[in-house]
Length: 182
Image (cartoon, rainbow, N blue to C red; front, side):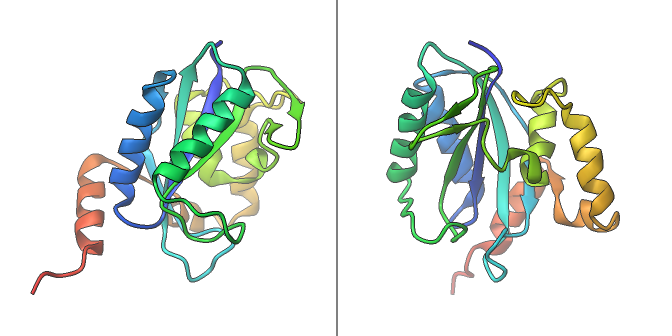
């Protein structure tokens, strides 16, 4: 099944390495067919938290959504993720955003992700790997939703808050965040 999407985020440790290794690890179990550029965004819900790097991965799989969710939770644990407060800083955050046209409400998983449509830091990278994406419950187009969220955000804040990064930018950011060797 195609049209499956995972959001990746990291704001502790070497964020780029965390995302790169998570993508490799996910690729051992599912067929990764696309990865968005990385975006840097402020920590959401944790004002003093370090900035996040975010991306979205598109994949194909024979697994069902619950099996994929268990895979993601296992990978988070391997990266040292400890679930404390909802928006606490973390080495790795993996969210199953959508699984084709499946809608689901269970104790383990809600599809599509319940906050998918409210977060530019998810929608911008999702649009990079799925410009045709439509919300599985409402059929609303992603581009319309992004435009709506940008309209209610101060226009000058959008590039500052959600900056797409290329590889050179990532190397410089991670180098700047490393403690100086004395």
